[in-house]
Image 1 (cartoon, rainbow, N blue to C red):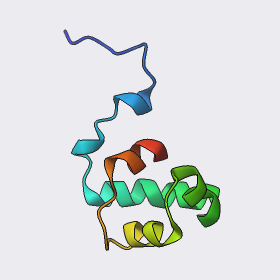
Image 2: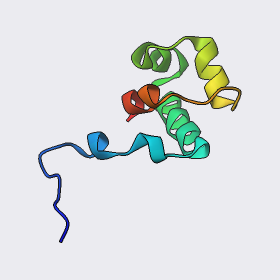
Image 3: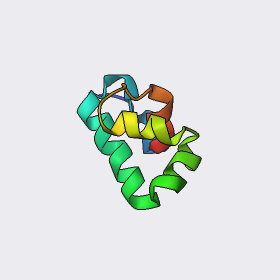
Image 4: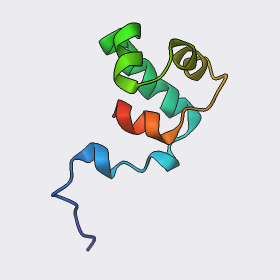
Length: 70
């Protein structure tokens, strides 16, 4: 049987490198919807232009940003 990582929260166990671009965009979009545009850029520590580019598929969302979004 496999060992469960009970001690770590679920968001630390997510392998963000394995997430596709569509899933990454969807996660970021949900964060933006929940927090609002300005608060999302503040919490994620990215610029408004970067968030726009990520959400519209112009640039790939870095692993670090996804980890913060989770």
